[in-house]
Image 1 (cartoon, one colour):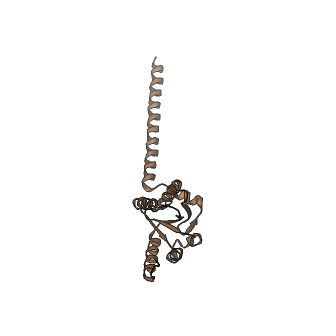
Image 2 (cartoon, helix red, strand yellow; image 1 turned 45 degrees about the horizontal axis):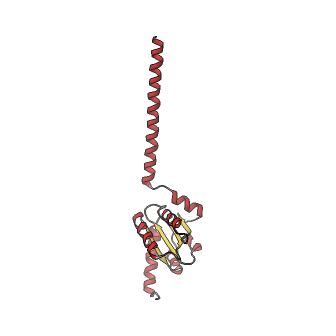
Length: 170
């Protein structure tokens, strides 16, 4: 069933609005993936602040025109599944990367971040980038290790000093 012109305009406006507010975007080929798996992916995406759509290439090209994701136009082909990271730039890349591990037919085609088309390596780096909470936890653990290491060093120095002072007294 063909979409009416009004519905197409609504879809383009919705995707354009997402494109103007999102931090990063990843496109993938989702052909031959069953609907139940896509629905589970969407559910996981909602929990991570990722908005996803399957959209016709022509409509997607119109929607991303004059946005920071216009560079993705070069990569659009076949059935396009697009995901937008709304909270953390690496959320969508991380989600798609994990999903692709378990679903061989799901292929990440490209991505964009800060008006730049990303290579496969850069998409992996974006996926591996820690979230704010993960970065804080790593910082706290590093500080804890440093503090406990200094404490052990200080206690060891005190022990050695006492031992040397006892030997001098005898």
